[in-house]
Image (cartoon, rainbow, N blue to C red; front, side, top):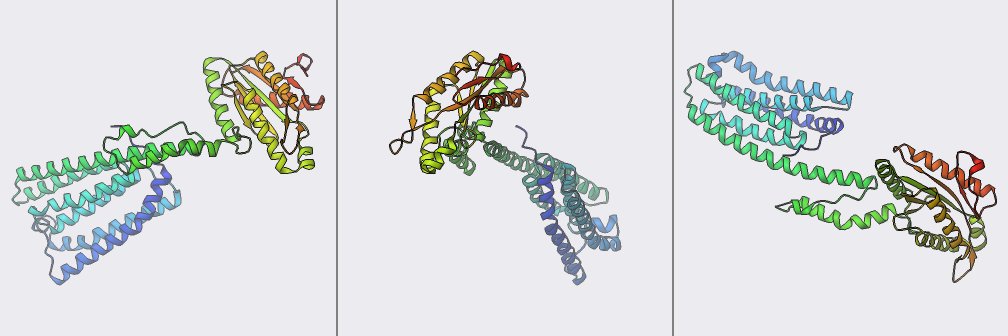
Length: 414
């Protein structure tokens, strides 16, 4: 069985925070009802408790145990509110405190043949512990429950009560098998929910590469239905989140995702990576002269032209209003320069805004390429391409400039 997803300290703290009010109210209510029924004579003490601690002390315990539990819960709540975090130790302590109250009350009030009621009440605590705190505290609760049940029977046996140990072990075995089955089923549900959470978290970051493995669910249920729904929506979501709707190219978020992926791949294979920083020359004049609707038509046409000019593995993105970037994997400076010149020539042959206008648009391109030694080169490569682009604009636009550490050796093809 795989490990369940780790619950964050903040999540555990939130759960403990809202549960404490219910625990305090339930403990005080149980104590008040127990003391009230005992006062009215409707509730008898356990013969074993009467022998072990005495009638007077058992009477005190009926009130003190719920109050002590409530004080412990209040202390845990205060700690959680101050720290805003809670680990597995605190959640386990809460589960053990639940069991302590259950078995103390069973010890004080139940006859020996009724001790199995402790197992029944503990089963509810076990399930809630697993749902809200995970498998490890639940398994510890299971062990503690079995230990408390055996100790209770042993205590009764030592003080003269009739304990049928065969029945005790059979009852405990049935409880243990049932509890383990419940824990296993819930763990499987939590693992699958954890898988969905991880997929959604990656999607939130713009990574839609993961899908839910529906075929792994031998018995499809509601979680499977959610996984299927996500799989159906995945492509559409990726398009909405990662694509610029006007140009049809990747948007900045989509580009950053692709850039990180290609940087990691290039660093792993020690291959070069090229960036082409592209800026439309004097695009503001297009909007001022022809209006923004025509400007949008131009942007759409530019995106189409860039995608047609790029190679199959290249990544074309609109990273600003009139700024575009082409990411060229496994491409040295010579190949990147040829690509940039092809793009410049394509713009020189093309006009935009048709059929309402025939607007010539030129581009300035800064080119940078280098072998990627590690993922940290991403910003350096981007800065080089931008530096080369600014040089192209300073030198009159409608041209390609390649970056070089020695400006005298940079290439200035028109």
